[in-house]
Structures are given as C-alpha cells and as structure tokens.
Amino acid sequence: MIPISRLFPRLFAAAVLVSLVSLTGCDALDGTEADSAVPSAEAIIVANGGNFSDQNGSLTFFDPETGTVTQSSSRAGFVQGVLATPTGLAILINTFDEGRIDVLDPVDGVLLAQYTGMDNPRDAHVRDDTLWVTTSTFGEIGHALALGPAGQVHSATPVGFVPEGILSWAGRTVVANNGSLGSGTTLSLVASDGQEAEEIEAGCDGPRDLYAASALMVVCSGKTVYTPDFSAVVETTPGQVVFINDQFDIEQTLTLPGQAGSTNGTETAYYAEATGELFITLSASEQVVVIDAATRSIARTYDLSGHPTLVGLSGIAYDAGRGMLYVGRFPQSSAGPFPDYAAAGTVQVLDTSGEQIDAFPAGIAISSIILQ
Image (cartoon, rainbow, N blue to C red; front, side, top):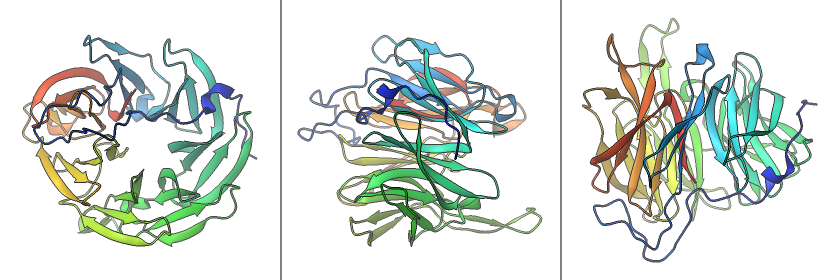
C-alpha cells in the first residue's frame, strides 16, 4: 500500500474547466477579433519547474486585467504541472526521492493538504470523486494511482514505461505510455475499479498528452534513437496526433512538421474547448502548430524562432475570450543560443495574428500554463 497523507475533501468536487465553454459565436485564432460571448480567464497560472538540481520550482500568477504578476515561494521540488479544481490547486512535484502533490488554496496560497509517498507524479485528472495520477520512476514501469477523497488509495495499477498524460474516455482511464525518448507506442486502459490495465497500440511513437473532443486526441512526441554511447542520433520520427473513437479504434493520424515537445520535457499542448483548437509546441523548431479538432487538420503554424533573448517553448494556453495566446519561453544562456535552466523565464502574450502584444516574467524553467 502506498502511504498517502491527509487529503482535504473539498478538492474532489467535479473537475473545473480551466477555460469556460461557449458553443455559439466562437472565435478561432485566425486573425479575427476575440468573441465577447466567450468568458475570459480571470487569472493565468504558470507552473515553473525550477532548476531540478536546486529543487526550487514555484508558481506565477498573472492578472490579465491589471497586469499584476505575483510570484510564489519555492515548492521544494520540480513543479511538473498544476491542476485547477473549484476549490484548490493540485501542484505536481517531482523530487530527488519520492514525489508529492501539494493542494493549495487558490486565493491565498495556503497549503490545504498534501499527498506523499508516491513515485514522481507526471499528470493528473479528476473523475467523479477520484484523482487519477500517473507516476514514474527511472528504469521501472509506471503506475496509474486512483486516490480517494478521504486519502485512501483505491488502486495502483501498473501501466507502461514513462507514463505521461492521463484522461477519462469511454468509461476508462487512459494513460499515454511515452517510453524512454519516445520509444513507447501504447495506451493503457484502466477500468474504474483499477483492475489490471489493458494495453492497446496508439499507432504512433511516444504517446504523451491526451485531450478529449469528438474523439480522443493523442499527442505523440515522436522518438529519438541514439547510438549505444549516446554520441550520435541514429533515427528520429516526427510527432503525430492520433484520433481514437469511443470503441478505441484509430480513426485518423495527423503527422506534425517536427517532434512535439517542450524545452524541459513537460506537457506539450493545450486544448481550447471554446474554439475546438489544439495548440501544440514544437520546441526544437520553436513553432506552435494549431490543429482544428473538427476537421482534424493543421489550421495554422506560428514561428516564434529568432527572438533576440528568448529560446525554446515550454507551457502554452489560449484565452479565447480575449483572443490571447500565452507561451512560456526560456532565457538564452550566456554561453550561446541555448536555454538557461537556472534563470527566470518569460511568458509571451500573442494576439490572434501571432504577434507579441505583451510579456510578463515568470519563474525558473516554465513547465505548464493553465487558465482560471
């Protein structure tokens, strides 16, 4: 049994949509004005991984109305990501030893509860009164944990190597098994009672992040193969988006113009339900690819390369109400055009044409961005 510390019960109300949805009059990121019928985000929350060796991850809160930026104190670990719920923020934290989840009050940042005694958490999803979490340890298979509102562990189901995204779909909890350097090719399907997972082929290299629309959208990173001594790259495959129906059949596969990924190996995409668009970061080429979920095609590509002081892409979110795209960037290292993993990052704010209209400082090594 995995020991879990006290869990504040109110965390597990129904999952909140981090971007509210309006199905009429919606606006795409296509150069048109934002639609006032779509609610705007009240706050932008940035998870800053921090320099892993310093264990100094943090959160940044940005108020888009006033432009106010508030930085939190260190969370004493690498902040992998953050999950918004109606009454709390679940912060996924990786450490040198075991991982944990801190639950913070979204107003005053007070620690409400804390999960401990688990492998490093990679992603989380709330379903009914259960928090589903993927956990991973180097060289070992991962697990999908089902955690109850009273702190109990309903189940700890073995899944694949390096599990990342987790989501409920068609009555199952689905886990994307990314594998080492994108070598994974499968999804694990876990029943609600946490029985042994069924493994199916995802039809791509490196399944990483999961999003739900009319189909389950699997964002696959692509894989990289090195020589045995890691001195040279032998093979790379591009990222893909695989569309899977509620019978878990592959309906369509869309190939991306490069590998999907972030600068520090965190979440690679953001799905804007209000516009039906999937925003994917291609960090190596510093591009953002926008997928139209309805037509299952690439709608636009934004090129963010060539900035004089910023490199890489890590963390992305789209506020449909304001027509603003938020993209996390790393500062350039003093040694050259490489990411500086120990200095504060910047969030660029882009308009509907992809031009920067604002920017604000965040913490070290941005890992993800959500809207509240």
